[in-house]
Amino acid sequence: MATDSSSSAGSRPNIVMVICHDLGQHVGCLGTTIETPQIDGLAEDGVLFTNHFCTAAQCSPSRGSIMTGRYPHNNGLVGLAHLGWEIGAQEVTLPMYLNTAGYCTYLFGLQHEHNEAPRLGYQHVDESRRDARGATELLVTFLEQQAQVSGDKPFFASVGFTEPHRPYDQEGYDKDNPEKVQPLPYLPDTPAIRAEIAGLHGLIFRVDECVGIIRETLERTGLADNTVFIFTTDHGIAMPRAKGTCYDPGLKTTFIMRWPGHFEGGVRHNALITNCDFLPTILDLVGAKTPDEVEGRSFLPLLESREYQARDDIYAEMTWHDKYNPMRCIRTRTHKYIRNFGNRPLVYLPADIYVSPSGQELRAEFYGTQRPAEELYDLLADPLEQNNVIDDPAYADIAQELRRRVQTWMEETNDALLYGDVPPTKAQRERIESAQLDN
Image 1 (cartoon, rainbow, N blue to C red):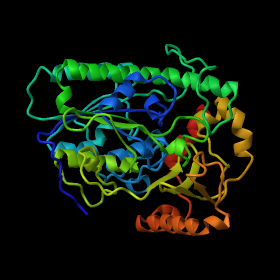
Image 2: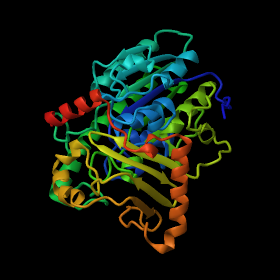
Image 3: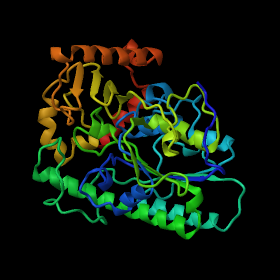
Image 4: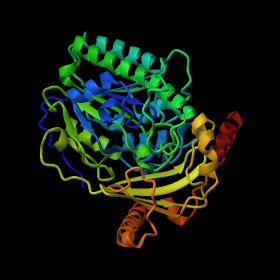
């Protein structure tokens, strides 16, 4: 049902959204031992969502849900944009909604939703610098200019960083000490994997540095008090059993919002949130109407400490990446059910992980066994999702209920997977084949 804004915010704020690549929840404020003082400081001053999930543990489909408030198989972006998938021509994006609401919309740095960024609806696009420092410099210049003018329109600025996307071994980044990094609990603790984590940390250090620069610039220019500052990412880290899967390390993402004087600082919410919910929340915040076709729901009441009807579950999916890997998933607070389609490896590894040291160590295990048709995990007893209990009689009722809910979701949204495989177009196939040759 369409809803009108119930925001008590008053005048409409500026909005700055920083979105980085492949970070997941690998930050200090969410329990990792990595030092991220700027991101942690933002969480201390703002609102941190500890159970924020993406709709797909891959770049373009997840970002497409942020842009449309809809699941990938509904908005059309079921694969990677640079391989030919696009948001459907009839879809309305967040910049388009905000343009109509009277905002000036800007993109600085990286986006991964379309090969032609202006078609996403941004009024101003500067993709000339996509690394964290470069995109931050573009934003800083813009903010300093905004502070000198008295425009009558608020602005929305999306700022995209390439980091911490692979490769992890890059010059110019300060790696962590492999001997001191915290092992990933869902992977074996080996020197090769530790070295990769250390390299990942170097890229995250740069992201953290730039978050600090943006925060300082907002304060210095006097824009902070009327600017909602958002920090997030698209999906989990690019390690085995994270990116490209429906396991929590792939689906759980960092999400922080700060608006001084409006959102109480230092608050942590553990409600289940999906990034489909982002668009309706922003529309609610700025006083715009949320159309019926938007599948997410506003969590502005949580930000404003009002009554909020919590979600019972979130849905996630995957169809195409660099390989065809169809799956659909439901997660509640206590259980995870995954429906897999076709004969696939036990754990799919996207190309950048497949060729990495960690991928090489685990390739034989993950690609030597076929994935089961269904997976069910008791998240309270087995938070690392290691023990598939789909055939355990004790879980038969839960399995049946979650199986039914996924089927209903697919039917109600006319999911193409219900009718068989989802093949690529000729152009998409050619791009996929070309990318594989390049690798």
